[in-house]
Image (cartoon, rainbow over all chains, first blue to last red; front, side, top):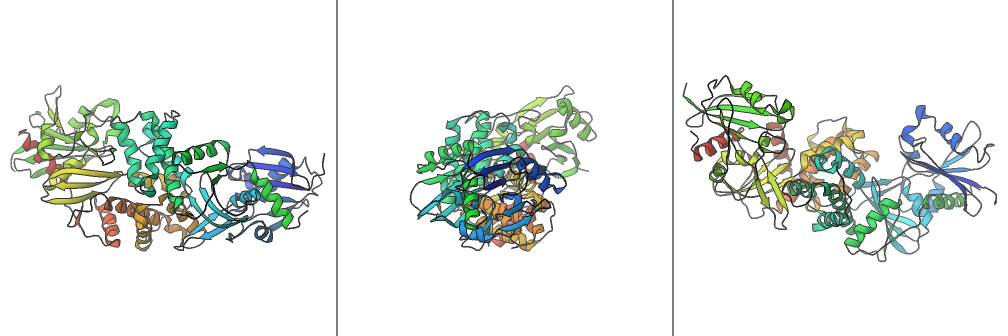
Length: 302
Length: 302
């Protein structure tokens, strides 16, 4: 086995993943834990980390690089957002370092901020590291589905602009806490219902969303579609609206849209993009560790 | 005191109101109860009604006309929606009648349905009776704020088209069940923050809503505005988006937009319309009883 040189930690609100890497960034071992930031008791982040990676490095000699919501206000070490444009080099230059009582050296990757044309701000934490891991060349557009989806413009590996959408978060809230809950509890998978939702959501450039939402209730009341298709239609509607919104964000970027995300959500976005005739491809999974390695190397951590 | 000739009941999901009227529709007495449809136990709608209006008519000789969600699936007597166009005459022709075991005669006003240009359906229950009560002449546009706001096109008293928006319902869900809940629990009234939200929501014809929602989180994180203004901004954002959506619904209708609704919400919509430079006026309160009287008279109930 090659010599371990780095430990990467991808620490989110509800997830914890870590990887042991060699000098080339190859993952020698990895683990997934249940200790998302929200479940850390008494802010004992160090204890949770030690229990997770201690077996790889009981002597605390390996450098650790951590990314994700671990640098948010509710995380271990809050850090300021770095403005775009930024890639691995800029992120390496903005690392926040901490040495624990046991002597473990941790470097935190901070998130990015962006100002839209109208001055309004956007933020990300964690996605910047995944993008750094993809090593994209030229000008590309990536979509990162999730609670707060991101559409990211990448130029030669650096993020130059991005746009978030509250799609997953809004979906859960609308599905479970509006009148739609009367029919979304009973969720039948249906690619046809999803596709119909995508079309509706994307119509008129994604405008008219509040009316479109109500008509998912009216349509089931009028018998236009089976009530148990409402959840699929709602999912399609919001993703379709998100895609239509994002079209105006980077109209000049050619090539396939790159989908970066977990398998189930990536498949859902691939289906939605296909419905709308948008060429796309899916990035390899686990770009976060590759990004952490690039940033660590750029920072001379190893 | 003039002779009582009619009892009107406006029965909603969470509200119950009733009025005793004379032969001219003048309200002789009225009451507000706490027994919304959701709080009726064992479907004892008759018992709740008797306790509310029994003192006016212990002998059960007066005709009762009821409107609102009382005719929905979760109400007393479900009735089919009547297609537009419809006014007091059509609603009178579509009354559903019931005589209780005690001999009380009840006529239920049904709701309306409408098909948009793309074939998608819209529905209302209760608002049609309020509109009938306004007695509007010419071609007018009314907005009825609420959980599911309605924009209603009225031609010589008849509703010819309408468009719902899930504004109030979505506001509550997004405020309390997304990442915005971190800052919306602490709600400071601010007409300036509300107006800013209205502008943002109405921009681009109401498109881009999923991104605009996220930026209310990003903006407070970046210190662009005080976090405790988030709820006001969110309220303005959704109402602004609703107004922008509705603009495309009835672009040809002149004259002030008529706001029909409870005092607090009506004031909020008046403020939003003013921000966007849209001329408006507020309808008198309690149009529901006036509408019930007109429909009852057209049906010869008295």
